[in-house]
Length: 224
Image (cartoon, rainbow, N blue to C red; front, side):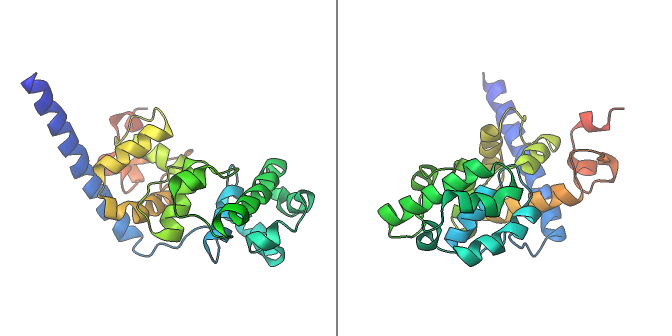
């Protein structure tokens, strides 16, 4: 039993050392980290993140200027018909569902929060179309609250780097929070997203040429 506990402690320390090395590389590559979704306040960020589900940030950023010109506040959004919202956001995909969510969450913000986006995970996750990942993005990027939103890039890279077993995004989030210091979570989740897009894509990835996988990647990545 003592040996097993020692093995667990050693494994944990090894992962934290690896995580520190990865964080140093990410910081060297991305010392400045712009927020991918264009917005001007917590409400417009919330709407943009809802739109980003199964859609690229580039597409969302093409759509939101038109939407926010018409309705950049909950008060303005509820005045639009759901059909009008759907028409504006149709190129983002899942437009019927997203338009209902955006209209519905705007109504709730007015009814319960005086038109303000609540700075609370549970309150955010209770809004239509808002899950844990969306709430985490809003809490970290709008309010500066430590969070580690896990998207497909982060989920993939956490497995490739041996920081998580890849079973599900919930476990990946827990594993990453365990090995990275809390004060770095908000920077790291964006740095990993940018790294995944630029150096560590899902397809056509060359681990030997990857700045992180070449040093910290799982052995399975290098098998032919």
